[in-house]
Amino acid sequence: MSQVSLPKSLHPNLPLTALAPMQDVTNLWFMKVIAHYGSPDYFFTEYFRVNDTSRLNRNILAAITENDTGRPVFAQMIGESIPDLVRTAKELCNYNIAGVDLNMGCPAPRIYRKNVGGGLLREPEKVDRILGELRYAVSDRPLTVKMRVGFENTDNFYQILDIINRHSIDLLSLHGRTVKDMYHGAVKYDLIGEAVRRVDCPVLANGNIHSATTAIEVLSQTGAAGVMVGRWAIGNPWIFNQIRQALRKEAIAPVPLVEVRNYIDRLCQTPTAATMPVRSRVGYLKMFLNYIALLVDAEGHFLRLMRHTQTEVELLNLCDRFLLVEETKTFALAPYSGL
Image (cartoon, rainbow, N blue to C red; front, side, top):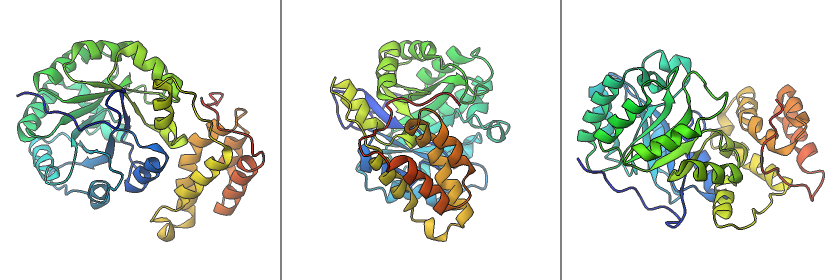
C-alpha cells in the first residue's frame, strides 16, 4: 500500500514543526494558547486509551471537533488489542483528523507494564501485526507512529524501522532516548539520523529540543524533516515562531518577561478553572511553571520558591515579583540546567 500525503505545512519551504502529544497537557485549551503565540505545523492529541471497553474520550475529541486553530490535528491512540485499535482508528476517521498516530513511546511504567506505549518496542512481531492491520483500516489518511529508539536498549531499533517501511507509515516522530531513559540522559540524535536514512517517510526529531538553536543543530545533525517539541513548548510557547525565525536566519525576537506573565494569566483562564478545586488549580499552574521557571531565572531561585508556594495568590504574587520587576528583562533563549 502506498503512502498518503501529509497535510500542508504552514511554511512549505521550511522544515516541519509539531507540538508533541503530552497527556494532561495538549488538550484543546493548550492548543489554542500555543496557537495564540505561534502555531506549529501539526498538533497531536493526548492519547485515546484503547481496549475492549474503550470509547472515544469526549474531552480529547474536543481537541479535534472544536479546534479553531486552523492547524491539522493528528489523533493519537495507545493500546495493544488489534481489533480495538482497528475499531477506534475507523471511528476516528469519521472526524476531521489529519491522520491516526500510534503511541509506541510512552515511558510511564504504569503504561508500558500493560504492554502498550513504549512497552510495544519489546515485541517487534506484535508491532508488525498492529501496523499491518491499522494500515489496512486507515488507507485514505496518514498513519503515523510516535516512538523511542528502544525499550531498555536499541536491539530492536532497525527491525522496527523496517516494519515501519513495510507498512508504508506516513510520518515517524522519533524520541532519541529509550523508554527506560524516561527524560534523562543524552538524546541519541545519531540514531534519529540513522532512521532518517533508513525509513521512506519523513522523520520528526524529538527529545530535549529546548530552544530554536537546538532545533537548528538537531535538524543539521539528523537530516530530519522537522522537529517535534514537547515539554519546552510548555515553558516557551513562542518556540515555534523562534524556530522559524532561526531557520530564516532572522534574529530571534526577545520575549519581555511581562509577556511571560501574560502567558501565565492566559493559562489560568482554562475553561475548567472555575470548577477546579483550588489545590488542583495550583498544581495545574505549577506543572507549567516547572518549565517556565527554568527560562526566567538562571539561578533557579524562582523555581525553588515556586515549588514551595501553597496558594494561588501566593503563586501569582511570586510570578509578579520575578516577572514584573524589570521591564527591560527578557526570557532566556535556553533553559537553566542546574537543577
